[in-house]
Length: 300
Picture 1: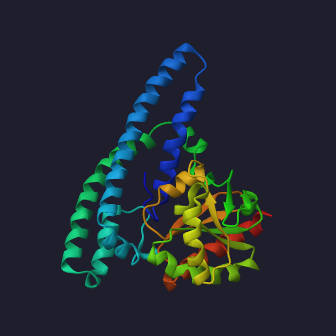
Picture 2: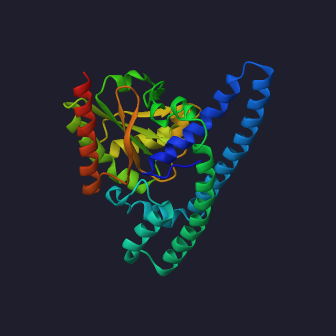
Picture 3: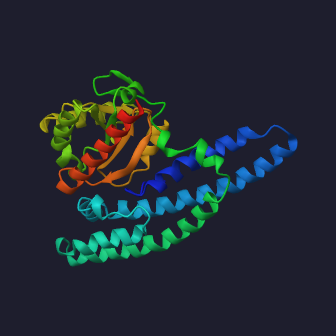
């Protein structure tokens, strides 16, 4: 599956799909319920499998034309995003507002991909409507906001990290990146500045390099000098790809992506689209950070 950047509902759905099927299978206690559950799970499984296939089709478009899409993603601005809007329209708007930055061939590729995505999105919306009309308990038991509530990982020096990382902070800024992502690397020094700025406020920045999953030593070795060259002092982590947080991260298709996590391990607000070396993005993120800190103070 994928992450539609600032579209938090998609994050929620993706995690829900992965967890509710398991929950349904465990819920039956009688032969009758078993039969009904198995039938329901099979139908749900097919629906979820189809959703995954559609997401992968979109991912493949981005992979096939990675250079031009990475260029486009680097131009995206969170302030332009409407989480309730149409994903294809959002992509088209980004391309249109930056059309002078692309060659004619690049524009042709982007616009063709967007129209393909538009058709895929129509199918996704139909399936999502069917799935979200089912039992509300599924939403409650598998909310994406709690994917960091049972967290574990290691920093690049091999030190263990658990969910106390979040409980010890009023807000934790989690930045997803990878070493070969130019916009990701471009914002690293600014993220380090942000980490220094919010420490006294009860905040912390943490990086998760998606290439370093499962303690990938080669990826860690490649990422470390990049971090050092940008003066990064905040922690960067390697996590288990099969964990809830790992699955969440693996759905991200456009980088960098930044989220805020409260001390209970809940994702707060919408994912941040684009690098915070963009002033609008930085200002928007700081506003969200202050909001989480204020809420934390109120709840004490």
